[in-house]
Length: 341
Length: 208
Image (cartoon, rainbow over all chains, first blue to last red; front, side, top):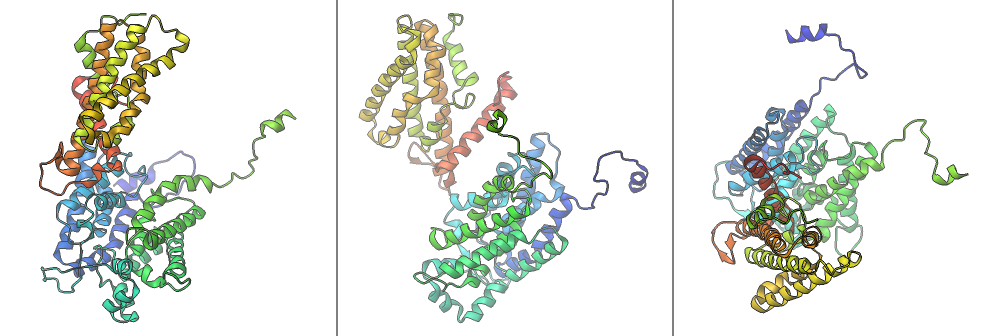
């Protein structure tokens, strides 16, 4: 019914006249769907606690969004998928072992403070899920760095804690990492599959790449940010990765561990908080990669993806202004001196 | 000139605490409201210091208003303010050395508070001594109130303690005692008070 009415309607307006079928909510739900394999791998490795945390994050994100919009008598947009995506991303960025109140506080900060107080979807300066995580990491430094050892058995409840590969790399160096994982090939495979300690959704690189490939194919994300992000990080890891020797680092370990893949494909590419001009996006990616490696190699935290993306989020408007395209045929306004002549 | 001469005490207090609250309404002097409010003790001492300075400055300026030449009034205001700040500074250093160690620098910075100079310029220099004193007490109480609320909230949630005594045996939200949390706390409380104001007190000047 609705469609036939639309066909007969005559619209008088300026171009564009052909509108795509894409809507914000469709993109949001697609991105959420593309994250599901990685989330499923996380649940597989870290057990029911991971599933509980993911569910809590999503539910409290949706509730926060609903409550805020209800309180301010705004249009309620819980169904557009953006709050769902924020909750899912936040959950995937948490360790599996955190107590139940942490996902709830994180989602509240992400949705209410970072997104809705700035004006809702499209107006937030920072990536909501990442601010939620940063808030939690600063507030609960101990709880947020207890990592569960991955097990393939879903039923085992007495989880052992262990350090993340990046934590080992930071505290004890490459030799210890080799000791834990055996040989290099084994290390790479374990990291690639996701059989390592870490946040729920960041470990399984293969599942994340699967989702990213789907998004790239559908054109929901472009290659500029992930490629420049990962490229810069790999280059810096190769050049400065080993202490005391140049060009001796192991870029693959750095790319496969931590939240690098999740950050580069799913969080740095957030439409609202990254630059919208292609050249600017490359600069944005380079900045993210540089800051990530700076924090990982020289900073106090073992992992720097989150802070790197948040810092670059601040620069997005500036980058967009710097790379603004010239208007064809426009000339510079005459300066005051030229007018005097 | 002296059109607000009939300012009563309770009216002055209501102005200072609700209508023209230095921090929640005028958004002035936000620096100390973030820097010294990480514990209730610091916040209250700071608020009391400002209350004292504001009142004494208003009284002094009002008493001297007929002899101050308009062209040099600002330097003289500053001299009076810094004189009273020195007094407060020494008193607090004597009675609460542990607080002074933490907030001493900000106590000295009371000299540069926009709110104190503004009240001296706008009110005390045009009014007689008694209303000026009421005005100083009102504005000072407003500041004390704001700092108490902010530091109460921050210490309770950020450390699970009040006045240095641990109260809640749970994981506190550590971020609230850090500077970043100070901005968050002030913003949230400002929103809360503006909401109360527009909702229940029906103030016409609400919202900044």
